[in-house]
Structure formats: C-alpha cells, structure tokens
Length: 315
Image (cartoon, rainbow, N blue to C red; front, top):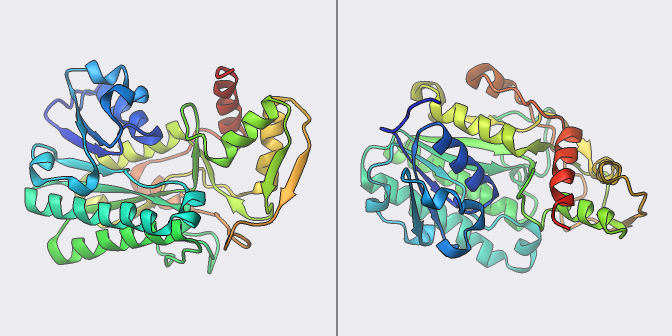
C-alpha cells in the first residue's frame, strides 16, 4: 500500500458508480478522502463500508452549495458530480444544464477562493464530441456536442479552461466513452441489454451503426489515479482519454451482451435518439499511454463479460 495520509482528495459525486470506486481505491492506497454527494448517508449504499473508514468523511450536500471551507485541506479535487444520463437530458435539458454547468462553476469558484489546490480533475464525456471531424479522436479535437447532455458537459469543460486561464485553476480533463462494470448505473444501455437478455426479453437497439468506446471501470479509475499521482507540471492544463481506445458499433455491443448472457433473445431495432445518427467514439489513448503510463487491461468484450457476471448476482 502506498502511504498518502498527508494528501487529501475531495470527490464530488462520491456516492455514484465512478466516485465510489475511486473512493475505495484511494482509501486502499492510504489517501484521506472527502466525498460530497446529494445522496443521504443512509442511502449511499455503494459507500456503506467506506462510511466507517476513519480516513473518509462524507459531506451530504449539492455541489452547487459547495463552499471554500469544504475545499480547504484537500490538495486534489475530482469533479464527478453530474446529471449523467443523456435520455433524461432530452426531457429535462434545463435541469441538466443547471446541474452540470452551474455545478462546475460553483466548484471552480470554491477552489479559487479556497487557495492552493494542486489539481482539479474533471470527468469529461464522449458525448462532448458528437460529430468527429477526424479519426482517431485525440485530445485536441474541438468539442462538437450533439445533444443537451453533451452540450452541458462541453460547457463545463470550457469553464475549467476559462478559469485556468483567468485565475490559474490547475485543471485536468479526463475523457471517457461508456464506462461499465459492477455497480454501474442501471439506466445505461449496456445494463439494460444484459438485464433483458438474462430475463428472456428482447434487446432494443436505438439506431445501431453509431459507435462507442466501452471501458471497464477498473481501467478508468486507474487512469484517474495515474493523473492524480503524476507531476503537476506534466498534467495540469492537459486533457487525456482513458477509455479502451477501441471503437465498436452499438449493434456489435448488443450482440456481445447477448453472447455474454448466453440467451439468444431477439434484437429489435428502434430509431436513433435525437442527434445520435453518425455519432462515433474512436478515441486515441496514446497521449495517456505516453504521459501517464496508462494502458487499458480489459477489452470491451471482457468488460461486458465481467459486468454480466455481476448482473447475474442481482436476480
């Protein structure tokens, strides 16, 4: 175990899928961690063991209400709190914008007023680049969102860049496509497909030709920690993709889910979600490999198989 007891890390959205996994790994490595989330402590089931850890403190509040005092004592801040579901953003675009843009600005202001923070890390989304202008997509690709959720995340990323240039906020952007694994959000299509296949229901594919970079949670968290531990001068002001570095069609992934469950349920096709047709996620992880030493250890097929094992335990 690496002893990091003198380093405090503040994680917004700590009760969620990525936040809880990152919290668990950082505590295992000896960091002091503060988790902030709107989930009441008694309902933060993914943190049920961590809540009793003396190196963990839980703040039950919204990131919109974060104060400089909440940031004090933390040299690293990881911003994961967000309205993370693209389908909800279609029906609640203003709510999504409020959560994702105003939340980012509130955090930036708290960090600015708190004083010295060595790194502010932001979880970006593949939806921020909805229409690739060239492939593979690298970190210099312009943000071209194609739906309200992608817009809200792109605006949040731009806010980090603006506050860095104006006030010297030491921001780092870490982008991924779709992240899956045990305890993943159940509104994500991969979970729905595995669940439906397991229960003998048809898999419903919206579109089919659009593509995704599908990454396993352990790989993504390892990428975040590599950025957290890297020398600040090598990563501050930089963006890194820490996904699988591979591109697969939605149709291919649906069939992989069916194969992982081993149940030949029918695949039914519906129309594309708004703005989704033509979306591609062909991200390059070369920069993360070169600068961070990041290499994904799980292929998308392995990620689906491991997630399917967890889904089976939910029966």
